[in-house]
Length: 491
Ligand SMILES: Cc1cc2nc3c(=O)[nH]c(=O)nc-3n(C[C@H](O)[C@H](O)[C@H](O)COP(=O)(O)OP(=O)(O)OC[C@H]3O[C@@H](n4cnc5c(N)ncnc54)[C@H](O)[C@@H]3O)c2cc1C
Image (cartoon, rainbow, N blue to C red; front, side, top):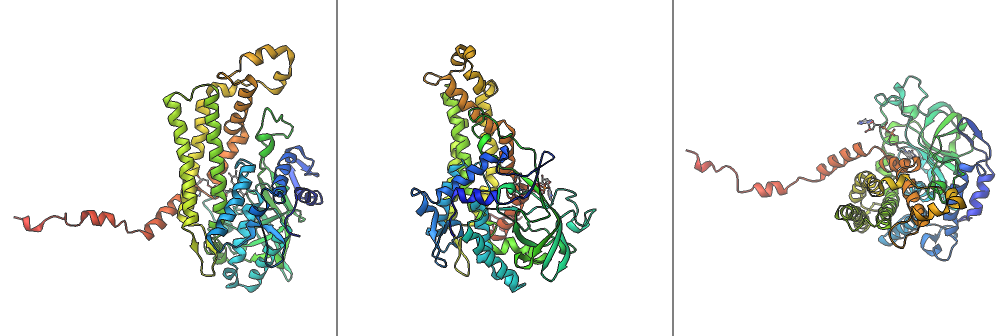
């Protein structure tokens, strides 16, 4: 089949009935649920871009094996040009959502591609796992599927490992082994966009300890598999908000969910790791499933940071404050953050690493540096929007106020910006800024940037220890050479 259209994605969605819960209610018709409706259409637009002459040749390619056109996310990169082609896909899709949707289909499609191209790792343990992985990759590539993932155990008692939790199957684990597969019970988090995806893939960040065998698993299932329950967080918008009043949250909310597996059967051909602590812990470092998707996250993060910086600049300009030095320095700081991330991305692509079997990966150190810096730069951009927008962010009237003729005299007069900026323009801009910086939607976007790929603090600690392993910090010895205590001067 190859690349899907938006309509094909939506038709597939309509054909399924996953067990989705939100606000205490079972959502039977995901497509027509107001909260999901617009985000579904934003994802559909991405699929349509694959068929659009303007983007098609940049973001898709003809698969040698099948002769069909598929997404660039499925190409195993073998050269700098291949990495750039991927980067173009990431950028085109990120721009389409202003970087506000992090788990667009490219993210996990790239992850599964990395798992499959490094199936040698699974082969060491069980050739069936490796075959399953490669077949799964082909299946999602050829059907252009959209995946969610849940790789974290629920936040119960973090001081204890999975098998030490008060109930053995609080964290997802194998409760029964069968000839034709296994049955899993327990929960996993935090599956972004789960209700509107096709499939879920389960694996884990390293951290299993001996005794956690039942929990050290990896597998994939259709999102509507019986027994799989999706419990959504409270929505940040109800799906009926005015586009004028909420230009971002009304369109780009990514729902997050806890996945509960109530004795769910996983067929043998969908199992990638079966109760193996070592394989579970080494999956990340050995298959590039951290580094390859970090490329997508870096590009998407750049677009999001750039977007927030542009919003800050336009807010400042609209009320005539960007001539003040204190405002200029804040905006200049944001522009430099954007340029720093852009430079790091380019370095990661230019200084790519080549694996033994020929696959190339963007260099890890600059990508990890982005991962360390964005959780500080993005909140700073939001703080700058709040600081420059100040009280104005909180006094915007609504679309309904603008439409009421009785209020027109006031709405047209008191909300104007600097010369040339009408009331409606300024209010519209400030509403966008508030969606991004003040609304629950914007706070979730902040939290996403901090935590989307693990705890930034522990990552930074690991970054230092690995940096130290590869560096002797030899300049210090150089500088001290010839300046030691001169023993000859001893009296
Ligand atoms: C908006 C959003 C979307 C997300 N989307 C996804 C998704 O699609 N799929 C997915 O699988 N995950 C997703 N995540 C989850 C993300 O992977 C986790 O939030 C992240 O890994 C951090 O884990 P945690 O939230 O359980 O925090 P915890 O690990 O519980 O950490 C809580 C606090 O305790 C500290 N802490 C905990 N353990 C230790 C320790 N051993 N040593 C030192 N300090 C410690 C941390 O520093 C932190 O401050 C998402 C998260 C967010 C916020």
